Length: 111
Image (cartoon, rainbow, N blue to C red):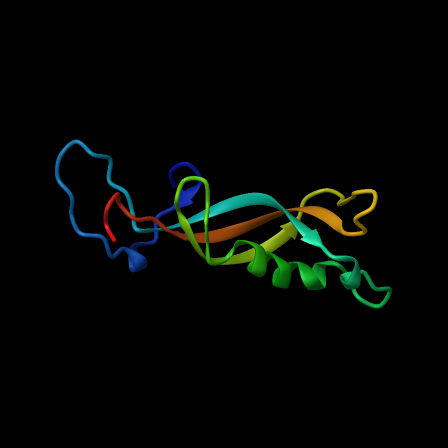
């Protein structure tokens, strides 16, 4: 485990590299924390917000690049962190979520 990343030997597809470069994996499993927006139509008496968090987190994070140019393939094990916030005039809940993500990392000019 390095910088919150877990080595996944069964997913290691990268070729051997030589030189003084630090070895990087194409696939890594990391724990992330971010905020999702839960629209007002998801707020119902008969359902918990946790029932919707998986669906909304998948839509918000999967299939996107992060600030380090890692592509998020999959997110799972979503859990809420603290209480959500409601912004005046919006009606949605902004909830902090912690989850695990499978990232794909490319080298520069690889594609």
